[in-house]
Length: 66
Image (spheres, rainbow, N blue to C red):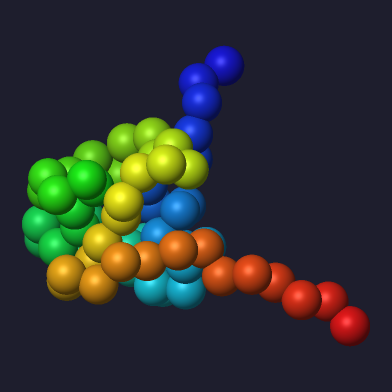
């Protein structure tokens, strides 16, 4: 089993958009991981990696259930 979260799922969890929309964002070269452009939606993101979209660091949104 591979570690990490697929990039497209990670970005969707960050609130960037639905998985299909974030795949377009990834393909357009707008996503960087640790400063390098990543074009693969299946790239595995580890918790210690710095992920940014259009120069802005993104993190998964915290869900609160009431």
